[in-house]
Image 1 (tube, rainbow, N blue to C red):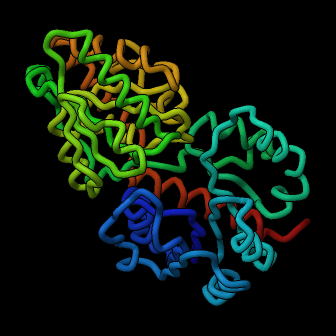
Image 2: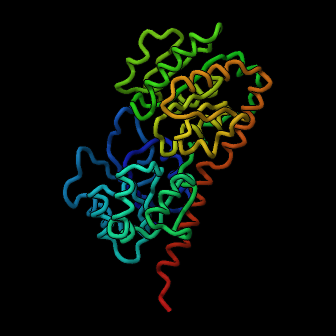
Image 3: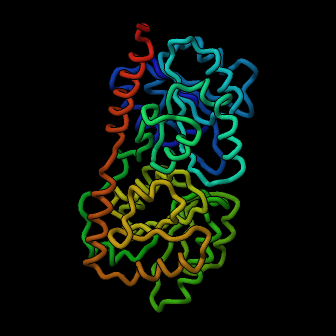
Length: 358
């Protein structure tokens, strides 16, 4: 099968998943911006297993449609259903092409989303045959856009489980490292400022605080200036983040809004106890309150500080149990499993779409 992916950005976990998809015999075309804000990936590996078209600024009129037409895909996966150049490409596809919306937004009951519901019958439904979602929260939004149960492909995101992951971890090892880890873009919606203020508050509440390592770049980096116990590493490549996770005690996800949050899955398969805000879509899959961490309200400095204090007060035995639960929950999906599921879903849906009408 020939599969085109029209992406709004690209990360290491996308590379891993699509490499597995190509290994199943599919020919891939990846269309994506050449750069993403507040990231610094040294390279992507999709040139090894897929055709590709990178664009910057804004694509020229007809540019994306021409690239997709020349590739002649059997199926197209598209991010950002409102992005004009991608919509233009989707509208130009032959009738027999399977058209999939790859969606991760969650329902937040904001005016823009209510408008999306109003225009969905004219703006979304005519273009897409089905929708891919990573979580039940995104599926709830997709259903409100008019996608029926049979039109939903579930399990659309996975950590790169060829890079991230850990064997069983001893509670004593986690206890002795005494380090919180946060891997995030240092921007408002990721809650970087909340993390900085909460960690400062946490240190004032305990006699022997854990340190905090922050991996990421962005305009809110100065929020951490002058805070004792903070180590700022800047942007780290996926393999470096994986090693940080294997050498830390707990993962912090302070996002105000996070449609999914693959970093949370990465932390789970790495055997880390986790503190996450409830507005992280993946939290429902990979955090079981009291078992491997806690979920807290978003944009709440006090709640995050208290959760950090609770975590650093946990003894070694319980940290070991929390790590085991994280690894078990993280095993729910993988790069290989993602590819196998998508292969099967696209195969039968394309066959059904091309079945002659009786």
